[in-house]
Length: 227
Image 1 (tube, rainbow, N blue to C red):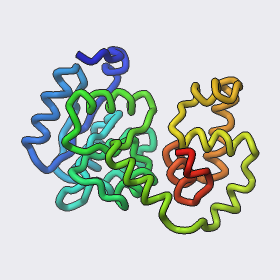
Image 2 (image 1 turned 135 degrees about the horizontal axis):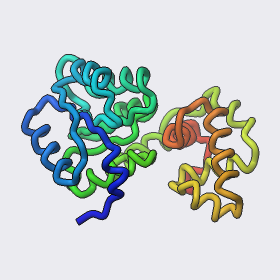
Image 3 (image 1 turned 180 degrees about the vertical axis):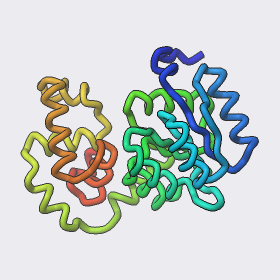
């Protein structure tokens, strides 16, 4: 059985959003088995927005494709209203455009519905700790599309104002290093790494490390061969 942070789990208040009641029931049973509190359910994006406003969950687990209002658009609205509310998108396919849109809108994770239950629990815990996750199958295709995508645009000029150290940190972020790992690799303090990351996010006008990594790859701001 997965070892999880009991204190952290007790702080998670999860809203389940899926138009299939059987899926919601299965997910609810899974999370309750691991002592994760389910505070509400919704069957479409419109209901999800209403439930988020009323129940104030710490996390929303939401299907990408639903009637009335899909999960991607609902996530954007929820994140605009509640920036600190984590949103995890569940999907049956790896639609490249939707993955990019979800990340840009601030979603914390993009996960395939057929992911193993154990992995889903780990993802929820990781997101609660402030980390981000994109399913490996999706991530591989995402990186290929981004690396082979459009040519650099105006962002390249903004990138030029990054310091040499910030460029090193950005490259390591894209390579998947955590802040602690970057500190060890560059032989600097964790506080210094966090300061560099904050500066990078500000200069690239993005909200988090995931968006910075996506933008860096898309705009060819880093060495793609180092990925």
